[in-house]
Image (cartoon, rainbow, N blue to C red):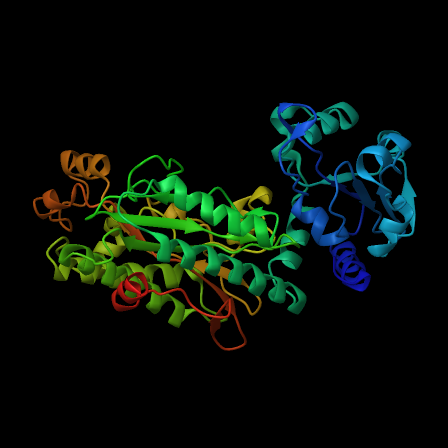
Length: 463
């Protein structure tokens, strides 16, 4: 946890943005993965962590912006808990660490909320994603399950996003730590990669590093020679010379801040000429995008600049044709990069995605596109000092998508479908870094940068 003043100030700012009603925070409970007492690793709700810092199950909290009252709902341990878990602090002592002086039993929350509703108070809640919390809201507030997302408080969501998306110095330090763990995960895999290994062997090593320095990886590790599948979580293949291995992985540190890096490696340790051609285009797009990131520019502008560079590079090697600007505006580059350039990152690897991507990555000035590819850009709005974002251009050769576009004549004026025939077994390439928007530009997070150029990768793998 941070010092209690951090949480006190965050809650004060939030209360100032939501003037009436009660702000309800539902923490998470433990979840059994094959029977109730054999649980998944516990992960607290990120907004609860941000405003209260208490990292344990079965807690809830309420803020009353009008009276200033703050309450944490939770139970003191029983003797049975002590036998199994050892001595535990009282809830009042834990609450004091977050600067909260009032504590009530967990089972009193239901009656507290019902009284508030009866007296005419509005209950603001964030979109629930855990079933236990959905059941609670349905039981206590009578909200149908099908309406919970729509009836979540927009005012509350916007207040949370406004605070959480601009990282404080204490948060940046945590993200530097998470980045360094992620760096170790990737660099170790890069050094260990050998022909004949099973993909899962590298996944296990990377997960072990994440668990040894923090609670977990920040998301299920993506590690696959089938890099054309963007989020491939199968790890059964034998590493084979001539193929590319996409590794997309990051760590959560002890205070649950995340990192998220991607590198693409040649299994043989050396890129073929065809692989080098595509890799160079992606690495140049990555560096161009990082160089453009600064306050005042929209991330959609950065995304489109990366697409223009990629289109020019693909045209230079004969895979695209026609006017480059027209190709970008018509969405032709989405054949090769059907995802967005990046997303915000913080306490969540896709920061605040539970609150709704359009609230996090867009605003009244920047509206999400419906165009294929561009619609998948999670972060499009204007960048501000304190934003932390990923920069992750990629180039993929997805046979089913290529066939669909060719058969339907989609963007035929910009795509050389005949030349793509030799790329059907290529796979994909993605390169991802985490950057902090600074006062005038940006900087990479972490104490170093993973090898990213062709020469750097081949040197690191050959050492």
